[in-house]
Image (cartoon, rainbow, N blue to C red):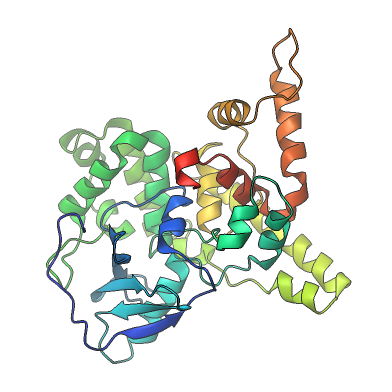
Length: 341
């Protein structure tokens, strides 16, 4: 059941949202680098997710009003039911946000083809299990990535604390995740000392100030890519090569920008890139390498321990066949066994 269940939404007139065959809310949550954090609620039995969606006005991302929706799967059908929208000009912007949240527009055809030929990831292709759950806004993802990277075990409580302290009330009297403007109006002391977040609070406040000042505007990191899979289907090799080069250049620019943000380093940047639909940057920090070594030990035992350089080389070779999806492949390969079942 939902945790801290809110009042029910009107279920008389749901909107239909088309999804790729095999899409699963549960799988999208499982492979998300931030997972399920407040104010999201999830009921695996239905299955259904309740989300707070800000409605943008023009270039602004300010939530006026905040729309709360229930997203429910329909077993055996390639559609989701979206409750709580009613009718009006707000409907399509909200549905667009839901598509972004669930990665429904991500071009994964090539990735699934590559997984189908891999001994460990064939199940991903069979289940179409590579769509990544995101937050409704890029700023929310930035903050949550920072929190998960710094304090993974406390992430749920910290996100709830931020919602309680700064979030705007939703139409169901719950509290949304705060915007960059709301967090920027706070003080470092309020976040670091009064809320007990310490140095993480300082980083969150500085990140909010940067984003509120438009350095960068978070939503500019979202983009709709031309279809690499379509170029393959059309057998247009030149277009395919051009699109791959364009994609890698874009991912490099975004990675460089993220590295300038407070708290974003080698652990946070690859996670945030996956939330932006950028799937190439491999995680080479100590924790990721140790997980890889434990999950996939050397087949040939030797008296000498594997060096860091040898381990890195083995990881790169393992991911070499996944083209511009190496980071996505790595993240799924490193899932705990019970999460990839």
